Image 1 (tube, one colour):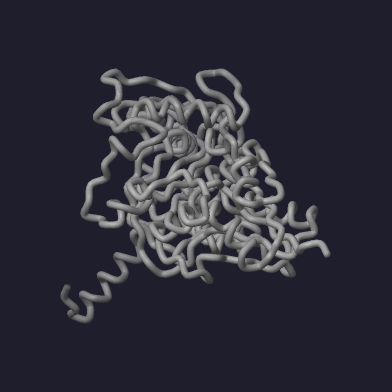
Image 2 (tube, rainbow, N blue to C red):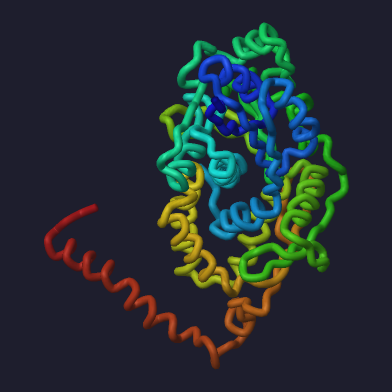
Length: 406
C-alpha cells in the first residue's frame, strides 16, 4: 500500500533538515521536499542530494526569483510599505510566493499535508498557513515546532547529530538567518539582548559596515516607469538583474543596514539585524520621484495607506481582497511616477542628488521668488489666509466674549 505524501517547505537549514526524519518517524509519510528559490544564492547548491540523504523521496527546487521581484517586491515598493519605519519586509513578502508553490506541488503530488519549519513564536507560521488556507482550505498543515519535544536550536543540533543528519550550523554559530534576493535577516545569539551592539564584522553577508566602506562617494541614477524601476544609469534592466546590481552597489557602500526591535504578530517583541542594500536605494529613489510627481493629497493618503499595507504584508495577508485592492490603488496613484532619480551613496548614506520627470508638478515659474503674477499673485495670499484662518478667528472672538482665558 502506497504511503501518504507530505510536502515539506525545505531550505536545507537546521530545522527543515531534521524535520524530514521526524516526519518519517512520527507519521510514516513519504516526504516531498520543496525549496522555493527566491534568491538564496549558493544555499540551494546540493540541496536535492541533501534532502534525499535526509530521507526525502524527491526534492523540487522551484525558481521563483523573477516572479518574486515582479509580483511581490515591486508592488510592496510601489506602496512605499515599511513595517514600523525600518523593516523593508524582505522575509514577509517571500513567504506567500513560497507557500503558493507548496500548494501547487501538493496538488501535483496528491499530498495530504503540507509541513513547514516555522517556530511557534514567529511570524512565518502565520504567513505560510494563511496563504495555504487561502489557496486550499482542505489541506492538512503540520508545524513540528508546535508539536515535538525539541525546545531550542541547541536541541535541534543534538537531534541532527543523534540521527546522523548533516546541518549547515554548529552550536558556535546559531544565528537564525533568512536570505533572498531582497535581503538577509539575522536573529538569535547575542542579538537577543537589545543592549548588545551587533558584531557586524562577523554578521554581515551582503555588504560592509559603513566605517569600512569606500572613502569616495558613488552616484547612481535609477529610472522608473509608472512607479516601477526599469533602469540603472540609463541602461534598461530586467527586474531581478536590477535588484541584484543595486544590492552589490549598496552593499559596497554600507547602505541598508537596519537594527530593529520589532513587534511580532504573535504578541512579542524581537530583535534582528536586516541587510537590504538594493531595496534601501530603491525606496529612497521612488520617494524622491513621488515628491516631484504626486500632489499633496495623494502623497498624504499614500503615506497613511502604506502603513496598513505594510501590516498586511507583515501579517501574511497577501492573498486577501484588501491587499489586492490596495495594490490596484497604488498602481493608479503611480501612473505618472515616471522619470529618473540620482542618488549619492557614501558610508551607509543614500542621499538625493536630483530628480526629473516629464510629469513633474514642480513649476519654476510659480515656485520662484521672482515676479510670477500671471500664475500666482502675492496679493491673493491675504484673502486665502483670511478664509483659512476664519475658524480660529471666530473661536478667539467667542473666548473673548465669554471671558475664557488660555
